[in-house]
Image (tube, rainbow, N blue to C red):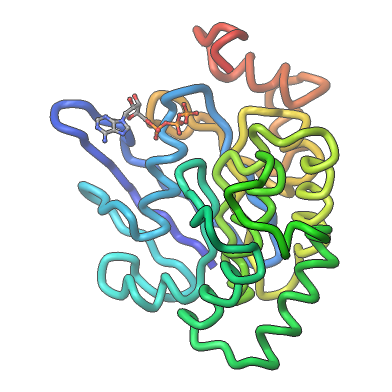
Length: 244
Ligand SMILES: Nc1ncnc2c1ncn2[C@@H]1O[C@H](COP(=O)(O)OP(=O)(O)OP(=O)(O)O)[C@@H](O)[C@H]1O
């Protein structure tokens, strides 16, 4: 469902990605892990058609991101740190406006909002204005907005960061519950316990290169460590714990 072949990304003289190749399949939650500056956001922005790779090729559900960005955009939902909400709109109004952008009809939109209300425990968040939201309420609506069209590929870039323990739990349970045929979730995080809980396979990036890739048991076996955090430190040599 996702093929990344020899992708590089250069910002001026700086190489943020140095020939990354990866594959991920439908039905998986695929974790993208790495310390600050590893290149995770750069790679996810390339998959989301927001950036072009300098070299290499990315194919999402059979569509090349460079040749068919519109087709890719219809298939993906993206949550990253940089997305605001219009302060004067309620959560429900935000979701209706995004559903309209995706060409969803009235009945489908109503049913989808009801489902997202249940899955993400939106509750009264739907009917108050975004300007009055807490961080957790805002993030839930940002996630609901990203998946209003039920995308096949869900890209969550540090989506749990800043959430309190309840909102984080809702998000992690949602990610696990929506795993299934026809869907791939890409989950980038610094938090190894989150990755250990939700991810079927992980890739660890460091300084723009892939350090390892595989199921969590495979990564643990490769390093001889007992948990992902220890395996991460063993693999990303030279990274201080405080940088992760
Ligand atoms: N627009 C840009 N211009 C120049 N350098 C950039 C740009 N965007 C990112 N970089 C650099 O590319 C490298 C990778 O950044 P990226 O944001 O992809 O890393 P990351 O793994 O997502 O890190 P973090 O966990 O801190 O978000 C960093 O060294 C960053 O400074």
